[in-house]
Amino acid sequence: MLEDYAIYRTVIEQVLREEEQLPSLPTITMKIRAALTQPNTTNNQLAKLIKADPSLTALLLKYACSPLYRTRVSPKSLTEVIAHLGWETVDRIVMSHSIKSLFTMQSPQLKKLFHIAWERQKLKSAISYTIAKQLSYKPLEEVLIASLISDLGTLAVLSAFKSKKDIPSDKTYYTLCREYSKSLGIVLLKKWGVNEHYIETIRYSGNWQGDTGDGFTLIDLINLGLFSAIRILSPQVELPAINSLVAFRKLPEELTAVTSNNELQLVNQYKQEISLIVQSF
Image (cartoon, rainbow, N blue to C red; front, side, top):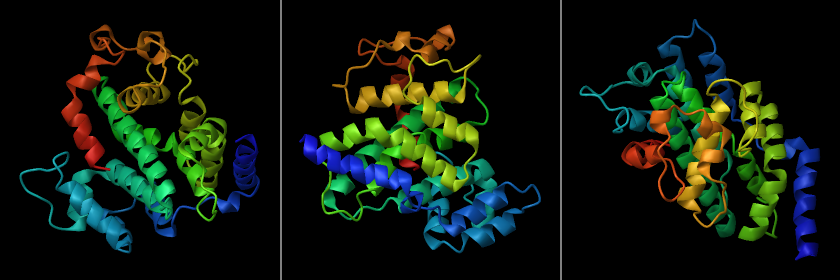
């Protein structure tokens, strides 16, 4: 086992030395995200860019008709969809679509591990968003993007083995994630030119007692979402008491109710809304 693990570590460390082995964001994604940062960009110009990716176009149309965003009068064109969803939502959908398409796995074992990691990231993001909404945190869509990419390193670990014959077991994969996912995630986000405050979320994600500054921060939201997602998906994992978390201690008193299972009552209360958000990814 020790000899095998050393082989897997060597693969990851080689990727860290040779960053070009990590996936790059598609050119179309870079163009769309660049356009979204320009105040003079119009919805028509955005629609023209997005139409170059038929699968992304179809996804945005699907989102606009989903229970989370649906209105009495459905938008009929892509330009209307963009206006209806708003730029922040479009940005989040573009990023989640790109991330998912970048980490396409062929091996059944890698597919299984990807599914587990992606489901946790979606649930964590949905819970973080729901808590943020109750706190009137702005901007809300930032929470979804940050939460989604704060565990990007767990997918990057998988990508290191895409072209390898020897696929790590579940146990080895989780051990590799604990050792390398943060480093890989930071390298990947820097390669993509993502804003530094998103990179900070990787550094502090899962640090339950870390000093996250004054007031309720983005990292606090992500840590509460992560803690809750682990409790739901992996109840056997040993976690500290939720009321010992720095993020929990920042919650207003009306949101601090805790279940007998060491979970936020808020998460149970908004289970349906959380489920809708998960489905929207």
